[in-house]
Amino acid sequence: MKLLRRQVLQLAAGMATLPVLSGSARAQAYPTRPITMVVPFAAGGATDTLARIVAERMRPALGQPVIIENVAGATGRIGVGRVVRAAPDGYTLSIGTSTTHVLIGALFALPFDLLKDLEPVAQLASEPLLISAKKTMPANTLPELIAWLKANPDKASVGVPGFGGTGHVTGISFQKETATSFQFVPYRGNGPAVQDLVAGQIDLMIEPSSNFLAQVRAGSIKAYALTSKTRLAAAPDIPTVDEAGLPGFHVSLWYGLWLPKGSPAEVIGRLNGAAVEALADPAIRSRLADLGLERPPRAQQTPEALGAYQRAEMEKWWPIIKAANIKAE
Image 1 (tube, helix red, strand yellow):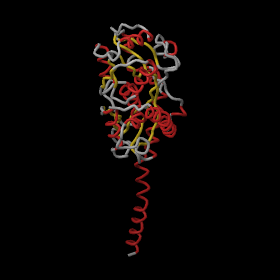
Image 2: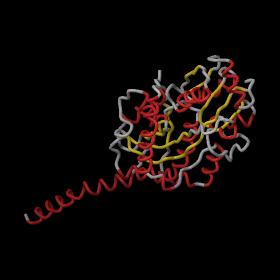
Image 3: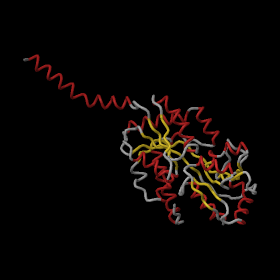
Image 4: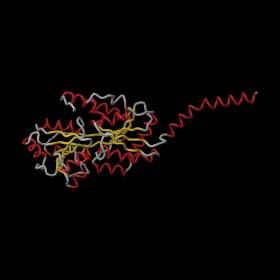
């Protein structure tokens, strides 16, 4: 009888420790299967390219592959919504930009909240935009391009990866700044738009510079100016807007990682650590530099820093978009 009682007490004591041990084990074991990184644009664009570079380098730190899933359409809203609705278990990760995680909040009535329904993980990179044109465009400099647009109102076609994105908003700003007018042509991503630019199916694009550098180097398109204060090391021959004749027209696109709201803190920390390790890799740094992407300072790579920056960008851009009465179609 005493033996039986002792066994029961030992079993009860062992069961009492199980929740703590299993919770610790789960935290240490994550991830136990592949992680999906949702790219809210079509394959071939700047976000897709960055996602594949970072995802591959995160694999050693995580011990599991990070699989890219392109969920394009609606200026990134479909892809972001896919992550918002996912289980907060760390296995569905959102990579996005200042377009998908800031601008769309002022342009659309979203079925989710960009701040409340997502957990920031890490800021990855930033880059200026490039004003570019098809190879056969008559203008060879930015002032010549502006003059050509003024002489041909509404005749030029400008490719954008969905209405309401950084390129679209920047294009509207460019029209107002230069007193020009042209037509926007929406695409499901920058990749297909760049293909049409090279083929001469559209006339212009004002999109992240990393989309175009290979084509510029190959002489397949014309590059007029970068929307930055300094030239890119990866493309030293392309002037800035200040140098090219449109001073102060500065715009940048930045990239980050997010998880669904409610994701465990230890999971966020694990993914942040993997992303930071990837950005610190000299080979990755070299690849990003070749694309014209700049890494944020180490202090800006934390979840808290990304969350604060995202909120600050909303406070900056939302009033401007609403005051200009910009309506995405």
